[in-house]
Image (cartoon, rainbow, N blue to C red; front, side, top):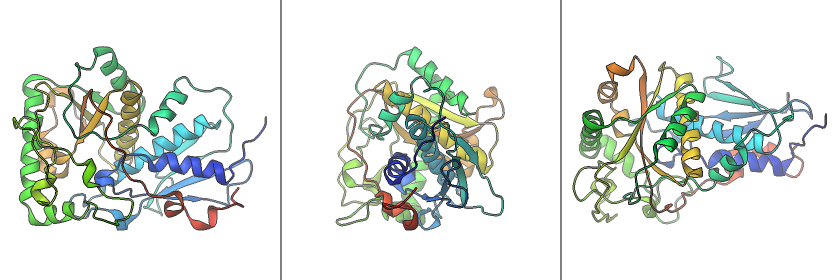
Length: 338
């Protein structure tokens, strides 16, 4: 069977797909290195490492959100590798002696068949954006919601769509977390530091990507204007019956957080294929007691990892991303990379 060339162009395509993944505050907490010791024409491993200097020590002290962000990048890598003809093998936390080594993707075998939907998911990688504006279209069809739930299950996670009192309770928790985030000096200072200014690097949150607040007070979006008054965000009417999803995992260890990130990104890509927009309501996940309260005893012992808001509306502006040379070891990126 013919082998595939992992040359500089292929490596750049893979890493470009990875860095298109969502991350908390667009922190992009990842780095990539090709392991030449095992990367011959037959055995190739693309390694993903978390960059601690782009962590959020106040908001994310245990690195849970960092792992979720890196897991999303790993999912994009897996899809891009499949699209390019490999049968990638993903190993999460492959070396206990290197805690910053999040995952290894082995690219030693070409794929015998192209999995259905791979091309569409790969195309969605470049179109997926977080949307913080109101959703104005019809409700998301039940068939699409079922497909999103099945997608999460395939990544060892559970996606539910609570309604009524449970949904209202989750939104109240999110509102309480947002109140804390904007009134706690350390948290508000840290969040404010991630809003991009003129000439800022290509990570962090550009002002154009910030969304308005709900004029009716029903939807607790992140209120960046409360922590950065120079960024005006006029109120707007949000949807009265929001579609909220809860993503949970059975365990709550670092490997579960990585799986949550893979499930989150896979779900977001499937939603993008269906032209469904999404935004992340992560505020309550940043306070341990509120995150614990978000668990539903009726749904078993799962651990809530993220809340997602789905709907129809404008695609939203693209989010800036670091260039491939900024996230890939320089010795592995160039005309001679193999």
